[in-house]
Picture 1 (cartoon, one colour):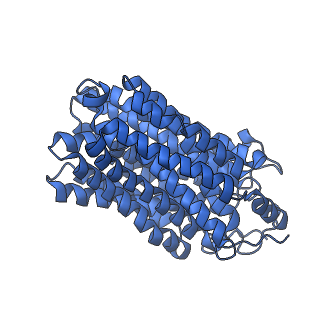
Picture 2 (spheres, rainbow, N blue to C red):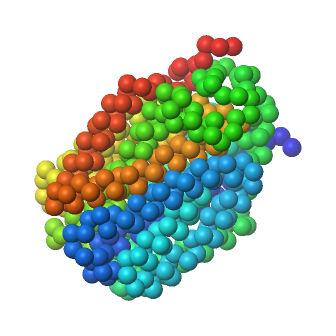
Amino acid sequence: MDLQLGIRANLQQFLHQLLQVLLVGLTIGMLRTVVPALAEAEFGVPKNSFVLLSAFVVAFGVVKGVMNFVAGRLSERLGRKRVLLIGWMVALPIPPMVWYAPDWNWIVLATLLLGINQGLTWSMTQTAKLDITRLDERGLTIGLNEFAGYLGVALAGIVTAYLAALLGARVGLLVFGLTVIGLALLLTQFRVKDTLPWARAEAARHPQGAAPQPRPRYPRQLSARPGSWEIFALMSWRDRRLAAICQAGLVEKFVDALVWVFYPLFLYRQGVSLPNVGWIIGIYGFVWGGSQLFTGRLSDHIGRHRPNVWGMWICGAGVALMLLGHGVAWWSLSAAISGFGMALLYPNLSAAVADISHPAWRGSAIGIYRFWRDLGYAIGALGLGLAAHFSGQMEAAFCFVALAMFASGALLAWFGEETHPRLNPSPIP
């Protein structure tokens, strides 16, 4: 059977994968507004215990980072669909655990399971869509993937805020979570196809050194059949371009950790109602998700490098602006600026990795990039928690994240390069 590449040729499966990532976003989004805002009142976290409050995101980041790496390797052995299904099965206990939780330790444990779920499911939805689309659609593909996911994150934050006000935090999260996860399991089992055969067919058509022109600038430091450690070393330090992308991915997660841990608490302490907290954080997610419909496609035309660098700096500026004004309108604008910066960098860092990763080991490369990127949740949450703890001010965490984004963007500008094969093709025949 001839397995064609392209969104149009695989439209039905592409849409099923978009629905899957929407459900993935809804799953993580249910813990991003209500749980941090009500950590003191509902789950017994002492006031100003910034490091303890950050603990659940630290746990999430470590586990999700590791699972991204594991998911990439597993998907090349078991197939994409099986890994996706395992990820959804792991998520089933999360809503009952949050509903029952007698203390904050249960929230941390539930977040560990969420990290496993997100590492397996979000990795597979992205990898599966890259398997079935063409090289010139890669920016659009990842843009649509992240649009659907962060649309889900934003919607879940708003819906769960209203459900918490209506039913109580625990019951609202239980009802929402079981509905989303149950639907995802059914759709995965009966509607999703395994896309690994497309990746294998592409690798067979274009073996190492024989890809069509314009030829991507694949790294030349690898053996014919690279192992996990060889690919990990290449991504992390041996290839300067990939290492620059990985460090940028890691640092940009500092922003999302800040939005997850401290934005709800910061706004709630400023007297903003829980539904309005949900809307402000939702604007961040809506702008991030919606703008990727444009920014992913934009990078297919102008390249990945400039949107990535500018995205880092714009996102950091949005974080800094949160402290420079007051009121729902100002905080909404600041959140929107951070969301737009994220939209510029988020799909295009992944697209840059995909550009210069050979189809034979692309799944592993994406998994390793996502390992470093989501480890940023843990490092960022720990860093901003310590910054707030030692200064005694939550605002110090905002300064820490803004400065990190500006510095990381400068490093990416210095060590990175354009990866789009049409704009910077390999000179080697």
